[in-house]
Length: 178
Image 1 (cartoon, rainbow, N blue to C red):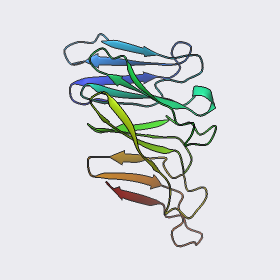
Image 2 (image 1 turned 30 degrees about the vertical axis):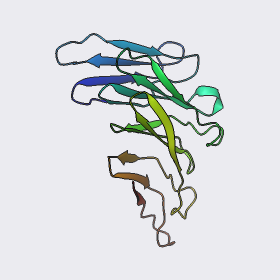
Image 3 (image 1 turned 45 degrees about the vertical axis):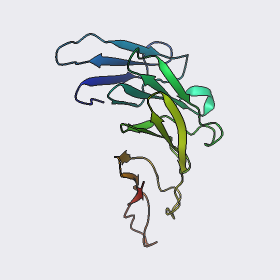
């Protein structure tokens, strides 16, 4: 992910548990400013996002649930662990997908209840909401296999949703207004 100034690259099979690399001003400097590492089997770096002096990195292999880590750009040290064990189902690959705005991190896994929105101000993080597939009718709809966020909306795709319940699968996008 590249925010115009900083670049973050994930390498989920590097080392024993995956790695992520941050490059400050990569057009002028091709040396990593920071390397994030993880424990065995975590798959750190499967998903990455960066926005200014904050970054988020997914690790879907953590403890049977998955996790995401938030980093502070001053030292690129771990600022917070987004641990979803009370909100998501086991083996959900939470942390597989991450998007970020200047004040929010959206993290998902691979099932309809595995979204978590986390808001932050500076270094203070708090769970904003758990997002569920309230409008999806089909199972599996692949709700959450793709999504994007900005300061006003969260759009989540459900490519296998059969809207009119016939033999054709149309797919759907669910739009959440903040």
